[in-house]
Length: 432
Image 1 (tube, rainbow, N blue to C red):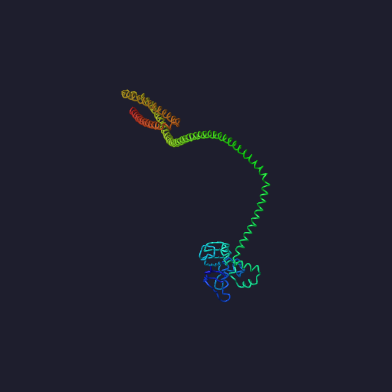
Image 2: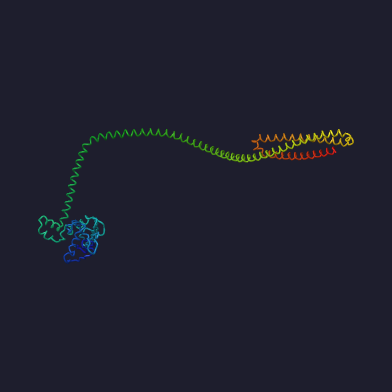
């Protein structure tokens, strides 16, 4: 087994990546002081697991990262990789080539890889133990180490020989075994103490176990009784539940019926509202018609007053006619001689006068009847205001009848006027 290649970047003075190839035989690295020759051996020791910054000629582990120069900035990571030939299987790993990589960051974090697989530092130390390449091995002798070896004590030299002879691995294993044995003895002592405490607690625990068994028995009985009680209670509750369920169903049916009834009543109420609204509209129409009717009645009342005035005028004319009649009678007596000559004409005139008087009387009776009828109709219209809503058409017909009667009265009045005019003309002829 020999070292085939060293790769490094950011380690001490190696700012850029470098590859140092080693061939079988002797490989020498020469150069002036301060060129970084010792940094190669430090890189090999560091990647093999060296943890002491002083052994790497530094005060702390961050000192192995490139610190920068006038022309370059400092780096934040250092990485070293060793490539070893393992064709003879000196290392306990099934690879012909073994690459070991170590990486450290300025924040203090470290990473370790064996054949690019993440591992621990302990894995690297165990891998190179008993191979002569461990971090404590003397296969790498730095400056001042020769003098230290020669001036060392017998015990220290013995460690060097044991490392070279491959005994150090077994010593370390022995130390681990002794440490584990001490831990085991300590654990046995603790076990004995625990057993002593347990033995002291056995009798109380037996009593507690008896009590626990009785408790479990009583608990089982109690559980059975509780289950029976619960079954009874559940049966009762189930009966109550069924009864309540039936009541709820009945109440739901009643509720549905009530809702149906309420909806029907709401529909009726809505219909009643619509009817009331229609009645209000009809009342408004009737009121407007009533106003028109009152106006018509007032108009008829005015016409009635006119008729009364006309009747009064007719009465005055009658009085005048009576006066004229008396005058005519006087004249007749005075002119009896003249009348006898025209006796036939006078009789005819008397007959005509009687007829005229009869007609006047009939007209007066007809007028009085019409006035009474009009008064009664007006009173009926006023008293039947409420009934007018249902008798609107009939009253309209009555109004038409009244108009026809008024027309007849007007015609009869005109006929009366013509008769009076004729009578007046006749009296003038008689006077003549």
